[in-house]
Every structure is written in C-alpha cells, then in structure tokens.
Length: 204
Image (cartoon, rainbow, N blue to C red; front, side):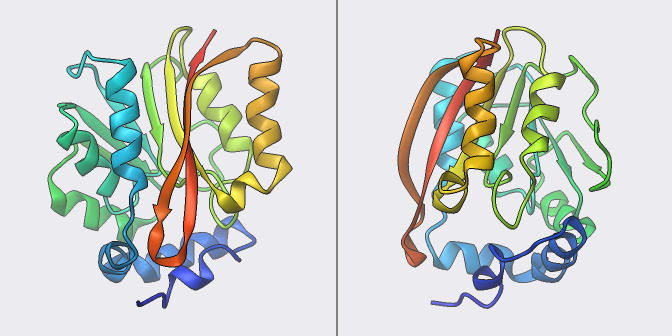
C-alpha cells in the first residue's frame, strides 16, 4: 500500500513543517488515505449523530483537510457544515467536494480562530496529535464552545501514547469543566494497523 506522505506525517515537529507537508500531500491525500482504509471520519460523524439528533444545527469541522470529514458528516445527515484549515491546497480539495457551507483558511499562529460561541458542535478528525495540532489547540476549541456545546474528536494511537494530549483531555474532565459522553477505540488507518479513540465531550 502507498504510504509516501503518510509515513512522514507523524514525525513533523513544527507548525510550519506540518503546513508544508500537507500542502504537498493535498493532491494525493484522499487516494493514499483511502488505500489505508481511513475509518475515523465516519466514526466521528456517527458518534456526533448518536448524541445530537438535531442534524440541522451547524457543525464546525476544525482542521477539515481535504473534506473527507465533511463528506462523512453529510452522510450522517448533517446539513450545514463549515470547515477551517490552514493548508490552502487542502482547502481547494475540500471546496471541490461541495460538502461545506463556508471554508476558511486559518493561520497556524492564530491562537483563537473560532469566534467564541459561534458553534455548539465542533469536530476534530485526526487533527490533534503528533505531527498535527499541538495540545494547546484542544484548549482553544473548548474555550470557543458555549456551555452545553459538544466537541467530537479523535486521538490516534500516537496521540494516546503522548501524555501531553491525554493529559489535556483529563484536565478538562477532572475539574468538571467538561464531561465525557462517549469514548470508543477502533479503526483509524487499518492499512498501517493504526487505531484511534473517538471521544464525545460536552462543555459544562
């Protein structure tokens, strides 16, 4: 199976290196990920639908990449999906899919790209983790949510092994700033035998 860019994705150490990598990967991303059985977008969409049956409410797909997560949300019935993504090349791929209402390019240095309270539903599919967004992005997303808002996201096995990421989640849960509604470990990229845990948390 092809892993030309995938092999390098978990060794990126700076936001700038990550952005460059994903810009270069954009054109072949969907094909390479599909070859390896990318399962997490569908799992996240189903997890959100299972706890939030109002599929008319807007969803922010943060770090939307080429739009595979937006397509999965559409398949789960969600009708209004906005995407945010730092890679311009990835956004072009997402735009071509027609799954989104609005797509916004954000700066990797922007500490608060989401207007506070603008969305009650935010997803992060494969966004938080080694070689991707740093743990601080978790706080940024949670601060942007209103009380009762939902964050549905995944940690792949690399992120699960990193206490900086699991610790960030536990910080919110342990002080009751958020509560865990569901957690399920399952397939992420079966082609490289990588799994992920999909979480649904509600801001208190």
